Length: 202
Ligand code: T5A
Image (cartoon, rainbow, N blue to C red; front, top):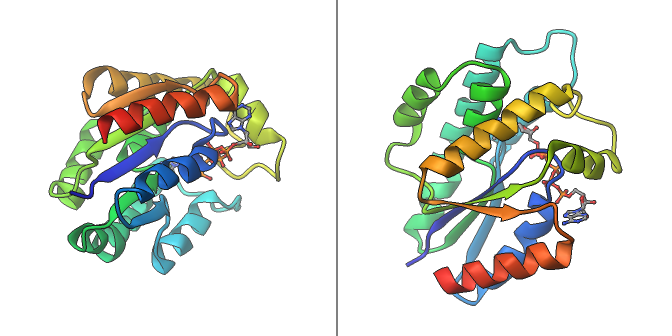
């Protein structure tokens, strides 16, 4: 049966790069819908623009949190649930694990409100597997920095990203549906680790 798989990790660890490999492996098992958060539908992509762009009236942490869940609610109802109902695999770049790490730990909002919102928005739609790509913050930022202009999140300080990483590691420690892959390794090794684990799981 098709499942809902999420790829998590902080900036530049290689989520987009490895999404293609995972989609390829899954394709042997059925249709795959690739998507991302925030985003995945036209409305949710508009919310993504609001969240990532640098603007004078930047969202305060609570507005940021609510916008993440507004985008997620739209994405789940319009794209994730319909795909799963049609027997398609859903492969998503980020989900609520990101909210716990970035807003819960990075912005220090804690987990209580996030868990309440998660319950409201997707108590009936949880990932079957979360693949967390872990690397020291400096490694990811250096990789991400080789590309375009930093967005609003990428412009945060090192301390913010260290808290985000702690948030990810805390989730991976307590949730058995999470895998941790060492993404600081050369890409070929990251991909062979991913392939071995995933083919075994499938
Ligand atoms: N956000 C999101 C929240 O705060 N709360 C939430 O609830 C959600 C859902 C979204 C932002 O929103 C925030 C988090 C984010 O800041 P995004 O664009 O989806 O932004 O996320 P980013 O992490 O910014 O995406 P990136 O594209 O920067 O990172 P990736 O996808 O992890 O990295 P990737 O694959 O583009 O790789 C970066 C570079 O590294 C190379 C690649 O070739 C590429 O050049 N690379 C490697 N190089 C050497 N060795 C390896 N192993 C490599 N793997 C990749």
